[in-house]
Structures are given as C-alpha cells and as structure tokens.
Image (cartoon, rainbow, N blue to C red; front, side, top):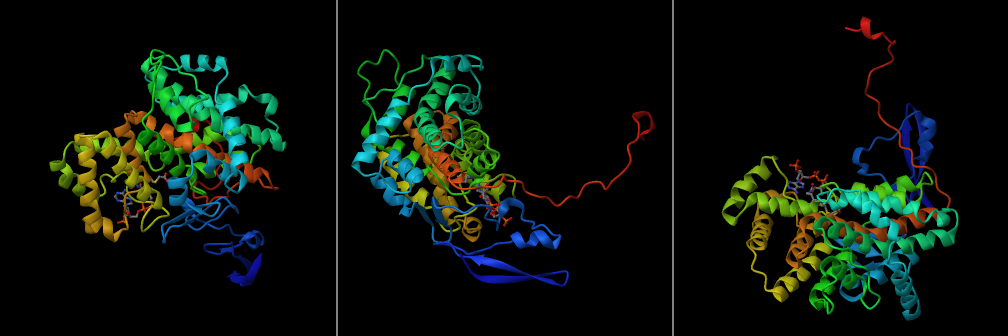
Length: 426
Ligand code: CMC
C-alpha cells in the first residue's frame, strides 16, 4: 500500500514515485513510473533493488536478525526439525501435529528416485565434482516427471515441491557414493530426514545394524535448517528469474544449484577448507593475513553482503560446532587452525573496521569436516538444504500473477558501424 511519495525530477519533469512500506524493514520506492522518463535505473549487484515482494523470509542485517515466516532462526534451529521449517517456508506457518505427520510421510514416500536415474550417474567420470553431477541430475528429474509439470496447476506445483525436498538427500548421497565407487544406498522409512542422509552417505550394504550418532544427526539437521532460506540471495534470485519464464521447476532448481556453486555464495564452505589447507599451520596465519590485507586473497567464511554486525546463523552454528567437536573428541590440526584463525581475525582492526565476521559457512565447513563429510560435498549439502527455500520462492511466485524477469542495461560498447568483409578488415 502506498503511504507517501518520493519526488524525482528528470530533465525538468517531476515524477511522483510511490513509497511502499512492508510489514518490516526499509520502505521501497516504486520506480515503475520512470518507464516514461526515458531513463533506466542503474544498480550493479542489486545493492538497493528489491525486484520482488515476498512473505517468506526477513533479514535485518544491521540487527543480525533472520526470520522465516516471522520465526527467529535461532528458535527454529534449536527447537524445530528441518522438515517443519521447510513446511513453514512453503505453507506460511509451522505445521500442527497432523500436518507434520502428513508432510513427513509424503517426504518419506517420495524419497526414492526412478531406477533409470542410476544410468545418469554412470555417465559421469568418477572424479566429477558432485556439484556438477547435481546440476545435471536435478535438471534431469524433469524428464522423469513430465506428467506433473503443469506449472499453472497448484497440485502439480505442490507435488513437485515434495518430490524435490524428498529426493535431494538421496541424489546428494548418490553423487558421493558414485565418486567412492560404492553401491548406492536406498532411503529407509525408519530414519528421519537427517539420519537418512547420513545413512545413505556412510552406510554400506554390509552395515546391517547401522546406527547414527544423535549429536551428529541433530547437527546435520541444524545445518539444513540454517541453510534453508535467505530471501533474495543470488541462487534464489536465479531460481525466480528462471521460473519467471515458465520454465519447469526442476530446471529452475538446477539453475539455483549452479548459481550456489560459486565461491562467493555456497561454494564458500568448501573454500574455507581449501584456505585452511593453503595456510597449513598456525605459524603461517600472520603471513596469510598480510595477503588478505593486501587484497591478494579473501578470508573465506568471513563477511556478508547483508549482515554487517553478525550472522545469526553463525552464532547457532558456532554452538553446534562446539558440541560436535566436544562429542567427537576431535583432535584435528585443521580444526585447531580454524579456531586460531577465527580468534586472530576477530581481534584484527582490518576485520573489525570492515565489520567482517565469520559467516555461516565458516562453522558449517568445520562441522562437516569433523563429521567426516568430504569437502567436495559441502556445497551439495547447502544445495540440499536450500532446496526448500528455492521451491518456496518459486511457489510464491507462481501463486500470483508475475512478469518475466527482464533487466535492462547501461550499454557501453561500440556505437553502430557497418559490416566489413574479412579480407577488407585491418
Ligand atoms: N576477506 C577479506 N576482506 C573482505 C572479505 C573477506 N572475506 N569480505 C569483504 N572484504 C573487504 C573488501 O575487500 C572490502 O574492503 P575495502 O572496503 O577496503 O575495499 C570490504 O570488506 C567490503 O567488502 P565487499 O566486497 O564490498 O562486500 P560485499 O558485500 O560485496 O561481499 C561477500 C560480501 C560475502 C561476497 C564477501 O564478504 C566475500 O567474498 N566473503 C568471502 C566469501 C564467503 O565467505 N561467502 C559466503 C557468504 S555466506 C553464505 C551465503 O549466503 O552464500
């Protein structure tokens, strides 16, 4: 609802631009009226642009607040199961007992994958990065479920959301098993979501009495919850942009996985461990810090576009990290190095002045390493968890009329020139 207007004068003509206030956060200036002005707005990196209206997630970067459907992230992570959070992201509220049982059952029913999908895995080299496999196989799901791909049909959309959330742990674990040359493990109905993922990752057919460790299972579930959604981040915006063309949801989520892969986004947790490898040991930290300060490298797992005080997910993740390390009694030099690095960075004026704090990926990388998850799987786990957020945004977009996303540009290339044949070119 427009409360008031901003006035903008362009070439002597005044435009009244409605100011819209959401339920929380900064108001926005609706610049649609600029269409008539002969100008575009210019905002590389979407620093001040809100391309959508959404009711799913709210972030106050200054306060370090993250709310999903209004619920604070620490309350969700410490009290709810990931699948309850996924339900809330999709439906707007946490489920009551009946809704919870029904949703969890549907997820269990859809956790298997079509047997033919195994053949896709066989097409990849054994040393393929699991994210490369995920981009391929998740996109390929559209070839298996084309009878329920009418994006204008609400039931089809909801079924697809269930299928994606249900199958991601299975596909993620398959991408790992394939790289190890081990047989795929099928999901079990007696395990919960996080247990099932750990079971499919680490068990073999010989482990008839496979049991998970409660601390690890709970930590895994928290990692899923803490990565579930983060409003209009790069990968979610990618899913929305792809979805705005009417593309099928599996293709849209595959696009999200591709966007997540980059080291500035979901690839950061893997990059943290690579950085620790590069540093080697605690004595080398000062030298590495000099490289960071001279802009040669970045301290991976630090800094955030939105959180300029602290990342509320990182706080919960740090507590979980301490619990996991205590429970497993880990004595790993890499983890000691990570802790030393965190301490030094938090006390260094370079980081303090720039408000650079450990983000969620710093601690999740350490927890995953402690659990025994190989580094190449870190971003896969992020993509598994973020699927509930991506699909919630896709569903929200499809629940109301929307336009195809089609940004404009500031063109700075050649002006018009005439074609010249190759033999006449200089
Ligand atoms: N190490 C060293 N310096 C940094 C870092 C870092 N990790 N991050 C930012 N800076 C410096 C940057 O050089 C700049 O300094 P100056 O003002 O002197 O030029 C200042 O801090 C502001 O940085 P920025 O690049 O303008 O910040 P941004 O909001 O554009 O970038 C970021 C945010 C997350 C891309 C960046 O902090 C970064 O690359 N961090 C490392 C990668 C990482 O951990 N990413 C995971 C983000 S959390 C998971 C997710 O949401 O995907």
